[in-house]
Length: 479
Image (cartoon, rainbow, N blue to C red; front, side, top):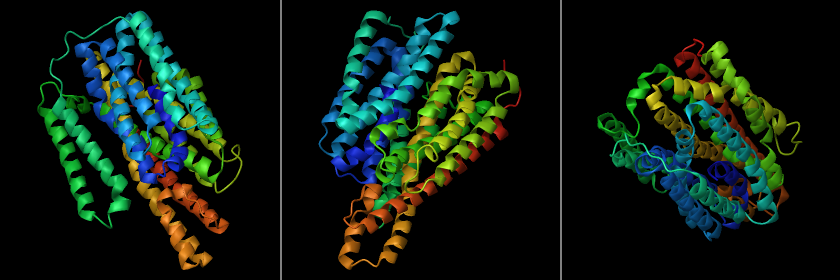
């Protein structure tokens, strides 16, 4: 459920934007409210399972996730949907860390690797088929069914867990939960995200509000670091970052997943609203990337033992960057096979070179006792990268879109009334509708121009992530 929701909702965004008359900042919040709660509370969710019972917390997360999914599907306003998505993210924060923890507790060491490998394979399968199923539901039913899809899955999970999953907990786990750290992380990330998303809308009318929220976010994040340093049972042990490999791997994760998450947020909008692909076709667009990750993950894992982690983690992001750059070739129109497919294949090969070596580096950089925490931190960092990127890229795309639309509308010499009508729909971006086909063409071309800005920023972030690997990761091969 959680992995499907992390990919399938993007495909539904154009449909729910039209249905709920939402602006681009509104649909950003649909994604960000979920990502914020998951990123900020992921480690707390894992600690709750260790303390109160992994199956119990896992089931509570599943039920909460399903209830919030039903709420999402029944929402009749964009504000209600955003709140429901935040609750869904809270359920995911209890659900996601519990899945791997239950596997680790349920299988002996000699078979645990195969069990985790099976788990990884199924996450790849759901990541692949989720957007396709979701696109089909959006196209033939409603965007609401993207969320209702979770209900039968939740029933199956609850039944199987009650019948087959044994309860387990960590008796040595601290009885103290780092609620101050969790609160500061949530407030800090939430305030920074709010300032970035609302900056284009409120800076002219309420600049002091944006400045105040930014300062609150920065202060909360600084306070989070102070609390974690002084806490007896911190949510994030800052001592882990004394390892150059661990710090380098997480910096790479932050930049690489920011590049991936930010760019892919706007890809379905481009495919559906500008290129006029169906929702099903847009959902299937990234299947080559997922197929490469699934087919070559074992090969990429062997690269670490043979060459060390630094080489694949340096080359992989550069190949990924080349794949992202290929998306800039697409204008308005063009065949999927000559525009999106080559870019997706190159991008997928680059990601394949990164995923297994990155996980191996993170796990080998810390003591075995801290492996679970290290994995959780890296998972949270990847989600924070996507969270911040969606907010920042929205500002970048909107700036490029407005600049391009101004230039194109000026050339059309529209009447004042027609120009006012076109300007009023700017917040909708590519979802704007105008009876004048010239204006509609200008909107599409301006969106593509803004999206190219996003693409080049993604390329730059991927190159920076490669530099992080070269500067911080130990080049020695690992067994």
